[in-house]
Image (cartoon, rainbow, N blue to C red; front, side, top):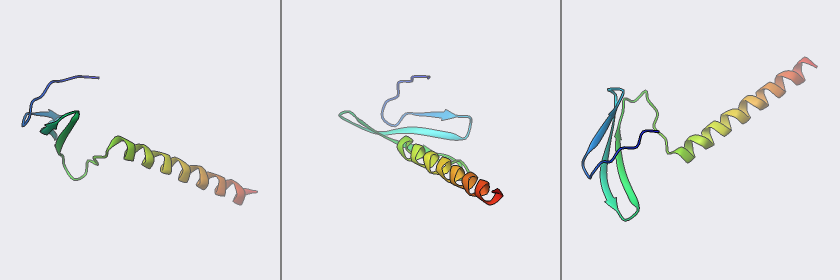
Length: 71
């Protein structure tokens, strides 16, 4: 992991496509803004993990259904 220090209104750029800007710092919360091309999805990590779990469950169910059809 790369750890960087940024102040309010400072940014970092990832792969010449994604810009992350510190918008506000209030207590222990940091509000960030992300500018990225539309084809690059941006999720909060907890949402991303839920999507991954749902996708895995869908694949598992589809595989089980396919096996049932074979039998």
